[in-house]
Length: 134
Image (cartoon, rainbow, N blue to C red; front, side, top):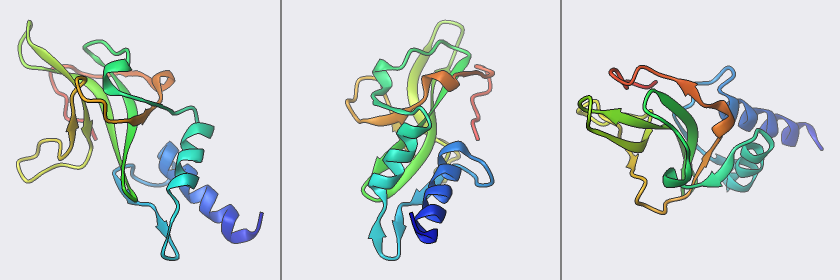
């Protein structure tokens, strides 16, 4: 592996793990070429699996990190339950990137077969009453 390849692998690993970089929206292009395959390999090396929102086991008050890849862009977000009332909640993957209203710019419900790369082993607790996830 040459120095450029090593540095690219390290940079992609930093995005995946969130070390030294904010996980949000990342263009997966290096020197004019797509590095999506490299990014997917890094995701898999760090325990992320290709799945769907519907297949992720998460309860109200928990969240699981995940990436959506659209073309050459990776979006980081979380699979969680958005709680509206004590009896009403909806499960979704919501991007940390926000729209102009402050809501998740991209939302994926469990009924969609859109693939995401998630890491159920990194499930953490969250405040279900305040799902502002950054």
